[in-house]
Structures are given as C-alpha cells and as structure tokens.
Length: 215
Image 1: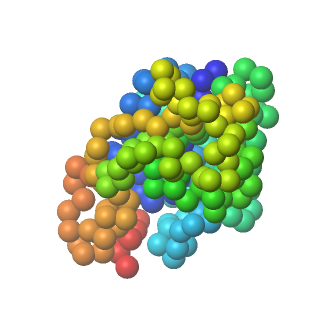
Image 2: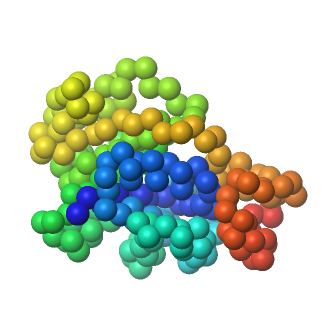
C-alpha cells in the first residue's frame, strides 16, 4: 500500500490543501491519502486554533466526495502535543510490512524540521514528499536538507530524489501554486470579508454556523 500521510492543523482546510494532495496522489500513484489533523500543534499559537474535533469534522466534510481521501483522528486520541514521529510509527504498526509510507508536507514546514521531535529518526521511517509552496523558491534543493543529516543522503538526479541510507527518500515536488492559506482565511473572517471560493462552500457554512475565527 502506497499511502500518503498528510498532517497539519487544517485550521480550516482549504482548496490549496485539497488540490495539492490530489496532485501528489496522482504523481506517486498513492492508494490513499490520509489527512491527519493535529491535536495540539507544537509550533502554532494555540489561541487561534479551533477545537480539534471541529477541524476533523471540517475535513470530513471537505473529503466526502473523494473515495481515495480519508481522515484519521489518531493525533486527537493522544493527549498533549502532536508529534509526527509518533503518528508515522502508528501507521507503520497499523498497516505492517505492506505499507510504503509517504509523509506529505510543504517546504515551509520542512525548513523547520530540525525543531521536530527526534527528527533525525524520521528519515529512516518513511519517504518525504516536500511540496514547493508559493513564496518558497528552493534554488538549491540540497541546501534545505539539515546539515546534521546531509551525509546520510545521496542525490539520484535521474529519479529526482535524495535517497537516505535507509533507502527511503525525500522528493521535492512542484504543485499548482494556489496561494491560499488558513491564516489569510482567518484574517478575512475577522475583518468580516468574503471567503467564498477559498475553501469548499460546505466548510465555509460550517465555519459560519459555529462563528469561528471572528476574534
């Protein structure tokens, strides 16, 4: 099973998340993509994050018409902050040897990976797909791999990947540049401005019904 693990705050989920995931699913012939909302994000200001069960519900609403997109509440069921190394280990245990995991994230998140819990171990647990997001131009991809682990990678130009000594790889992939962010959506809501066409209408209705992000 080639499974994409797409973690994030999804506060709220928007078209940029959904389109990027669909393009990655197609590029890597993934069996499924699992969206995993964080419980307590380690690197976010918690006061702007709506309760996790609401963010999960918004994801369920957004994904309901895609049979290859799923949600997981694994991080919601763990107390305390959410750590990717625990989430990846969970899915490896759940699916066993048949799993080929691909952890999906943006360049902005990857540039902060040295602040992640036990980050050096992550590269021996799964493949990484790093999506080039708007505003992040990586001129020399090798420069974004942490200095502490560069010696563990070999670049395979014919396959456009950096292969780790564990034989998992990091792929830097371009996706359609949809310059939408959850932060900008929250700002528009606080300013009582329209968020139409930035996220699925059913999700927007849920946000309005619960009066989220109004400040």
